[in-house]
Figure 1 (cartoon, rainbow, N blue to C red):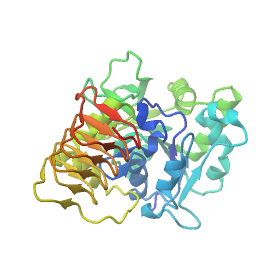
Figure 2: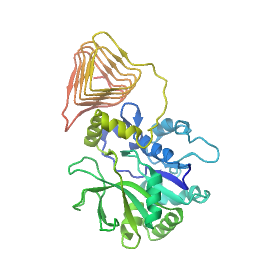
Figure 3: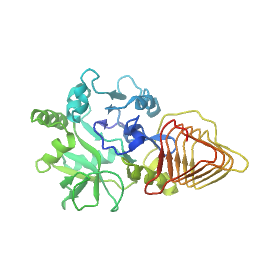
Figure 4: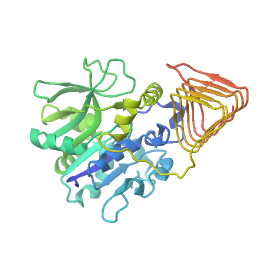
Length: 370
């Protein structure tokens, strides 16, 4: 069943403290979970909910993202009259990169005006979750809200940069602050906003006319007492992945079967770019436990409590423990990785030992030989 709603994945000025992992790629295209990218979760949630049109507002370093998304066929978004639209900033005017998301919404306003769909959901790419937007839209309509924000109660000390929200007794958002604020609340915004297309276009034009160009900071937060802004409480898994500590912690949580099943299959499956890889080859002497291993790996050493992406090679006598090794990584004979994150195509020479900690994992850059 198709929803009367279009999707927007907003990559403009996303909070990003991923250090070297986003040196050559945008946050949305950071690899996660053995074979996925961060954007796959928001994109799959929209497709599974029945959203027929999805626009990705790209910003910086989006070439790897374009390669990953392609035509949108892996998400069934390659239709002629609807589907996936990647809307980059202007290459002619370099000042576009410094402007807020409302400016980019206005610049591509034809995407909104040419479709008959009544509602819009605006999401970020760094929220690792599986959301049924049909339920969000049902509550939005029933409550009479102007804007519905998907929120989640999180334990204190959870890593990741997220806005905190405080609700009144009716479920209306009374206050919201950025992650560095001192608001005493365990409720965080998942940066997913449902509102009517008509209201969005009105907020875009009104805010820009006032010299304000940020959707949440200017169009929403300054109007909390004018608009009926309500919260939809998400009950499933959530990972706010926009810094290294959050990336490492939420990746390691995937080794818990109950977290993995809920995130990737409830309420629908998470899709990604398909690559035809052979099954992983476990050679004589391989010792693997409590790990997530993608296709195409070649393992002769020991792997424990780790995540290996496609095509990783672990040589004889090597040990990979509590680590994340991205695509085509090579661990040489008798090499040791302990609490490490290796980017794509990193090679560890024989006998080399790299050790980090669960709080500060060691990070190796892309295409580096150590």
